[in-house]
Image (cartoon, rainbow, N blue to C red):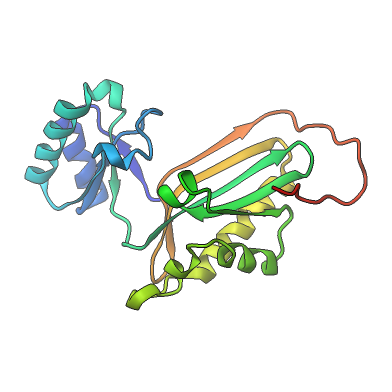
Length: 209
């Protein structure tokens, strides 16, 4: 993950940016605001102290007090395609790995693909190619292809994590920005709980939707 530092006030934000190096992003971490790009709560490519202080003032004026927003300063990631990688326990199938593009494709249109854990390298390759919006990853209408090899490796690592550690019952990486070279995980959460007991010993399969 790219490093992020708390910014409870403008001066702390400026010091954080000095440690991380400009350009930086300023964004809230409050649960009700995370991933809500439609609210204008994320400011990108802030190149210096003046821009950062202006963005800080605008965000707190628009969205509320800084202590309620949970503002952080984060190093800017290379531009790319925003994606979502998740793993969770399905009561009937066990651990399931999921992938989609961040925002409207997955949230509004349900354009998300799934594979069982443990996933193979073939599963990972098929996973990113099976969503309807996959052409955006491979150079749609003249855009540059992104690093799908790095994305496949991340999917395999998440699969291995939940397979090796059953107490990790949910993983949510959003957004994962896949650039032309490499990727950056800008938000991550995991939930730990006693693993569910499986009474069936037969082969697992994903339920039909």
